[in-house]
Length: 362
Image (cartoon, rainbow, N blue to C red):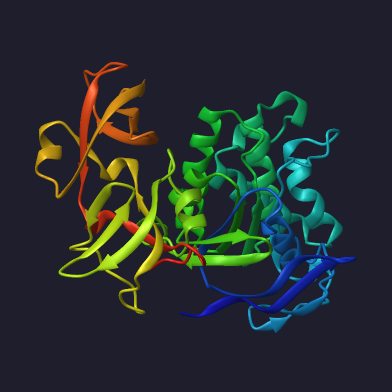
């Protein structure tokens, strides 16, 4: 795969605070990469380093094979969309889209062509004569994206562009951004703390914590084989259920937690192979079943329903098992109530095991 952006040993410090630490990342040409993590993990800082808005403390940044580590933002061949729309209130949408091009001395006919093309792609042609105050939040964000598009950049950077919008608009614009990428095939880097945005938009997700990338993989790989307990907890809503215990081997490999013992027959250990000792056993709520289906599973638990959350398409249920609260996701509109007894079951091949000390996947 041809590389569009290459980041080598990147470091950034503010005084004694290390924000990015020896970070390496290669992004393919035409790839949609999402930087995902909680507040303060360094994702926006990394984006601003790529954009040239922050001076790095160490390392190098290459865009299209060219070392741009110390180049001005305007010379990096990027278009950037911010969380705040950053539109000029006194200008029309057309004026906002064309302002940067006019300042760069682009011929008038080409400016008009680029503005019209961006407006067509984003379906904002009827809005070109309006000023930002007359636009909805979604329309303003489309205009902000349009301002980046007219630059004809090879790389687009998005810094949490949907976080100021309501849920319905976020969902609508998320679809539009994905379709935009499918049309343009440009390299896009997108920062968010929203795992749904990350899972639905990305070709690959980089999950960040403490200025480092913990896992870089496709959405399916991160969901099915999280590299650490932190990643497993971060992806998925409700979060993964965890049992604390230890892996033991004898006639068969098992996981012991309190009075319970789970068979690990069918679990695929990683390249390092079987490792016994203290560990975490994780199972996602949607990988657990209830009722008659549970009786067919090799691992079964009896509990009591604490809470029912009907969502229409499925139902979230919180149950109490031996003093521990677990979440399960049931299909459809399950006819269950608070206080009911319930049996749930799951297969060990759907489990995720993590070392107790390092919290790395086993």
